[in-house]
Image (tube, rainbow, N blue to C red):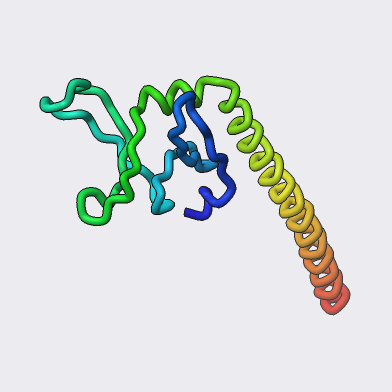
Length: 127
């Protein structure tokens, strides 16, 4: 769950609060990825999807959000913050890859020099 360590707490129009990880998943009050379920035939919203605690019914934290509410928040301007966070993560990853690339190029140059020196030494030894 390391990817969820930097996340945003998003408030919908009603006072419900949920946490969205940088991985795009909704997290319950246990800091676990919420499970998407479908309302059953005893519900007035039968067939609609909702997010709930993955530990339900055993150790339920009472986390509940209709998927429609989550989708509405994500499509709003809050989504911009999520995109910005993801963009920052990608920039950081790009920087790490560029640094690794520089290091590998240096190692490659050193290896080429060693090979050239070895070949020169062998030629010198043969003649």
